[in-house]
Amino acid sequence: MEEKFLKLTNAVYKILEFFPESDPLKNRAKDRALAIMDNLVLVNETKRLQGWATLANAFNEEKVKVQISDDIDILLGYLWIAKTQGWLNSANYLIVSYEYEKIKKEIEPVVEPAKSAQTTPKEPPEPVLDNVEANKGLASNSFVISARQEKILEFLNNNEKGQVMDLQTVLPDVTKRTIRRDLDELLLAGKIARFGEFNQVFYKLGS
Image (cartoon, rainbow, N blue to C red; front, side, top):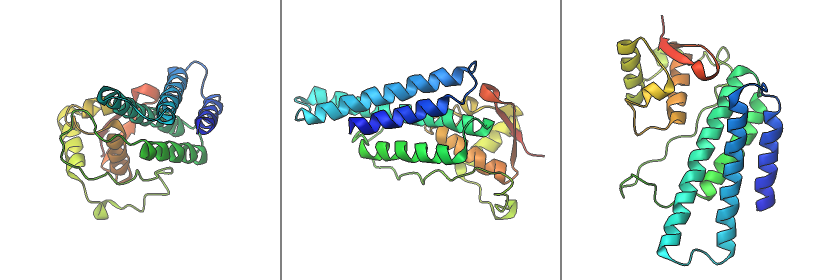
């Protein structure tokens, strides 16, 4: 199992070689991939040593699992940005994303912090939106705007423009990855436009 984590981390490091040397995203992604591997090894090693001996240790394991899941989302966000910049091809992005999503399912924490005992429905998998022109078949007249996307459009209407971190103020319980997915769908439907690059990407209402 540890060999599998090591191979995946090495694959990410090879991909990162194609990132511009001066871009801070490169080192951030490396650090995040390494942190994920270290925590996965920790969880795997603990299970091999007959589990967590006490309730406190069990809680610590859940915290580590939540951290792994959060780190995976952040790393995939970095890789998604790299894909939009043309540093990473779609095939490699999909392969790495698939492997990390599998890991998330395998180590899914039983209890997530700051959430009630109520079960919430799983979000559908993130759609593949590699080529905007090729996906323009999502015609705006057949596009159904979700409640989250309504809030995004309302924010952009009131504030002229916004970044993902700005949109989290009106969608505090929604992950950045889900917000980016909603933004991609709104882009394809022509409801909004994207400007800027790297860490300065922002969105405006479409014309």
